[in-house]
Image 1: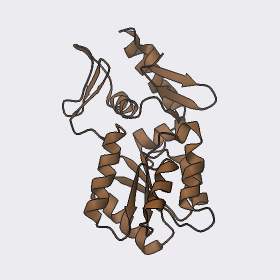
Image 2 (image 1 turned 60 degrees about the vertical axis):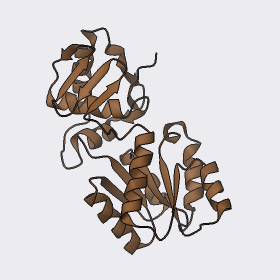
Image 3 (image 1 turned 135 degrees about the horizontal axis):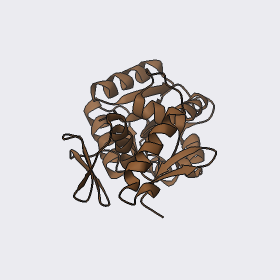
Length: 230
């Protein structure tokens, strides 16, 4: 299974480095930013599964940036965990009111951090405790490397399997071609963005044999979305 990606936004270099190390050891893929402006640029390149965001940042504060993000439809459901030295109840309430999913007061242990991250990812449906991912009548088994619709097994290539795995763990969200390349193929692999179109067409053809080609939808001017909704 491809690693879940976490965007770390923390201005203190030592803490940022520690967070990156802890996340790497826990099996996550992490991208770092020192302020909101840098974090916003990162979002244009890779769509993360979760943002670990420091409350106090230079320039735009973390809580203000989170508030702005949550106003945009594409980021509305993106999980955010706030990191802060502010432990007062009114601060926690403010964090939740702007849409944060959790709130961790500094100092914290790496074990607590990872436990809270996993809890938020489970609630958002991004982290599966089972080898099987079930979505409607679709079943993707990561151990047996099988994709099925009901009791019918689909013949898909390894790349198409990874693409479906990503789609099924990130339903109803729109991803650009570059974001899909990063998430499914990885940053170290260089291929043309249009290669995505080829695999999408193949995937639709396979799904179409079972009347489900509409699961992968084209969003003009941006990219693709996987959805069971009409």
